[in-house]
Amino acid sequence: MLPESDGPKAMECFERILLEMEAAEVAPLRGISVSVGVAVYGHRMSSSEELVAGAGDALDRARAAGGGRAELAVGEKCEPAAEPGHSDAIAGLVEALLERDRYTGEHSESVVRLAGSVARGLGLDGAEIERVCSAALLHDIGKVAIPDEILHNPGSLTEEEWKIMREHPAIGERILRAIPGLGGVARIVRHEHERFDGTGYPDGLSGDDIPIGSRIILACDAYHAMTSNRPYRKAMSHAEAIEEIARCAGSQFDPAVTGMLIGSLYGTTELRPRAIEPDRPPSARLGSAAR
Image (tube, rainbow, N blue to C red):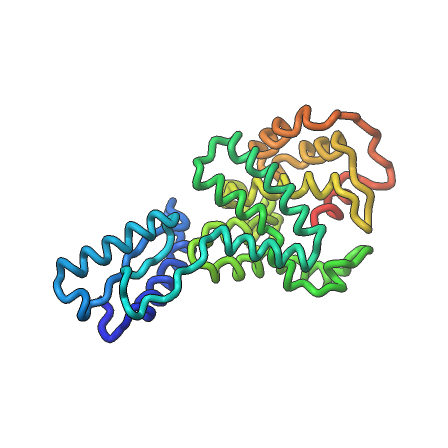
């Protein structure tokens, strides 16, 4: 089907197609995942039956490896080295994030636990829960490209610095889309700072147009950020953070996600209601927490 192409060239072609399909949106369909088996006509496979059988075997290996990938028939002289699995790629990116900013990396690991609990509570299927957890682990990967003087600034950011900081979801998407099979995760990461009312970034999506994984991560990310000490502010109590999450349901957060998150958190830490400090209104406290 691809004249004058050897195995590696055919693989490059199909990997580009897979990335485009993972980013595709056609009516209600989003992020189409496809498995591909590739066989090369030549001295080893010189009949249609041999080609179909070789491609079929490669297809089975692609499916067994988790799908959303292309595999070349075994035994081809031009067969490239096998790609590492998604787990290896994700582990490498997480390590890079930890080396860049230890708080951000450890924060992401905590968000994973919350996001997985909420995703299961909302009844998402196993594959979607896995995507949500992967995206939660890597939701801040774009911060590897943010300058140190902004990322580690202990004070308030200027408007120009905020403009640069707000680029990190799109940067994260570009990093993840370079890895075949992570298109669905990349899409979640791009939109994890979209607000339910449409005033978020980078695309100003609202309501159900925001991927459910992004809506889950936004709420879990905010809760963990608010309950963590940072150089520019003290941590809120568990009770204060839950109060703030509930107050922002329907504006910043998806109400269904908010309810499930609060349900998941209820009883995990003793609730000790504490008066909100008058010189720190809720909206200001939440904004400073959600870098």
